Length: 100
Image (cartoon, rainbow, N blue to C red; front, side, top):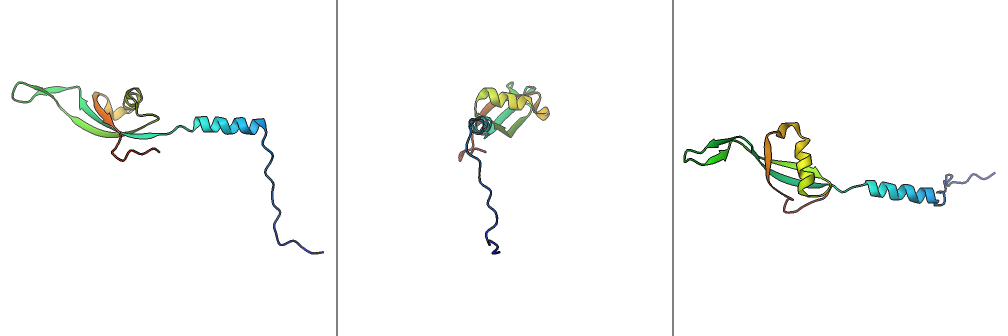
């Protein structure tokens, strides 16, 4: 008997409707993620010495959201325990905006 030098090759099954539905479901679940920078001010204010109220603290943080919209950015900030007491001043994508 002559042994074949090629290993046994497993064949892929033919596409079925279940296979196509599974692929479509996985593609729908795979959501893009965007990195967004958010400028925050504390809700506490103090006098700047000239009679003008200014925030006590400012922060610049980076968050990851599915779409760069204000609603999703607000939810991402609300979910972080270290950012309670801060309000969003502005948010933007980095200049060379990228998707994760």
